[in-house]
Amino acid sequence: MEWIGRARTAGWDVLLDAAAFVPANPLDLGAVHPDFVAVSWYKVFGYPTGVGCLVARREALALLRRPWFSGGTIRMASARGQWHTMAEGEAAFEDGTVNYLSIPDVETGLDWVGAVGMPEIHRHVTALTGRLLAGLAALRHSDGSPLARVYGPAGTGGRGGTVALNLLDAAGRVVDERLVARDSAARGISLRTGCFCNPGTGEAAFAVERAVLDGAARTASGTIDEYLEELGLPSGGAVRVSLGLSSNRADVDAFLAFAAETYRDVVPDTRDLSPRRAC
Image: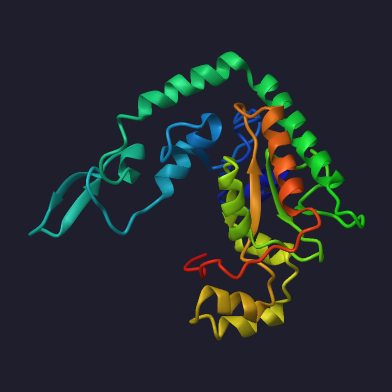
């Protein structure tokens, strides 16, 4: 948050991606002053999917210029005259028909979150995240080697309710995230697996050197699996366990039990996994 004021003082326009922050934390735009804030309502209260918002300062919005237009974003247009004028305010950036059937759900969701109370949600998610992190740290193979590798802080400070990790087999190798996705689904556990949304995070997590990345870029026209092999990566990404308002201790314990029962002292067979078609 302290970067916002420093960046604006240096003359930058600031877009704050608050999608992972606001589900369990209050964001006071009277105290911090980004020019734009991106929010996903799905991440805040789990429904509806595909609906988010971009909060913008009026003076910042007025500086934006679009080199094109589409349905709903203009006041007037002339095909033969080759001119158009944009709609005022946020309407100039809402291409097509907005999802008006789901927008009332956002108001209901915000009322629900407000009734529960953000401080209570924050304490709940923080406690569950701490329980998950402690449980992952305690997961061990019989020889004492770790069964999980967690990315990011080992404690709840400086992180949100989504924990990125890889499970490790009895030989200390990363368990392919595609296998974890299949096995967890069979246990009725919903996880997110695959490439990191932030490529830089993935490259840092796997400690990929810049020289290796430069070399792989020249041969990136092949398959995803060939690219991963070129980089020397053990897997295509990671497992993400997301905790929120509707999560509980039983959910955390179910995942920890699944990881221990499925992969402790095991070297899983991945020969029947389908090739990766996309990242």
